Image: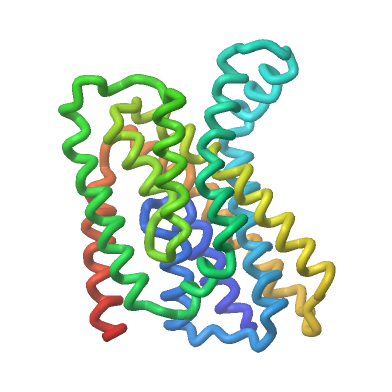
Length: 267
């Protein structure tokens, strides 16, 4: 893999992992545009693991204080606010965990450069983001994430395994439409993704240990990691501010435009 392609894909992963425009969809589009073909499935898997680890690390740095507070609350071994928050995170993981357990191979079949599917799903993401402009008028607007909210947001996260459906976009938009406070849903959305991504990454690492790539070029991995980490830090911090300001509708317009272009290109 050329270093330039590794750099661009790393930046793309870092930015779109947090911005509500679908990282998986943009990575699929990026592979088509860059004519990305590593020629080694194991090496491609390793590159994907490295990029996801970079974005997880950037999330942990941005929310380091929250993570420390949650862990501190858990070790007090009582039903405090931190323990309840952790329980809601676990509840939100159930839908995506079931999909990963029973439908992993079926879901992976969607990641084959099908830009027509990506375009349709980007349009769907745009519709969901556009609907958030009506969240301001909700009566119950401004409450914290409840257990029912966590379950529904978890379903939204499970649906976002499809390329073109934004994970952050779908979970944040769903939370806003449920009336959750902007700051609280941004915090919940970014923290809820950590356990599933860490778990999926560990499983991929196990697969790589069992079948290591024949071609092991460390430089593209390093370049991709640094690019994804730095762009992830920027995008995560920026996204929190955008949610607070209610600017998601602009990303809806972006998704409509890119989705339409992808559909036309895929026909």
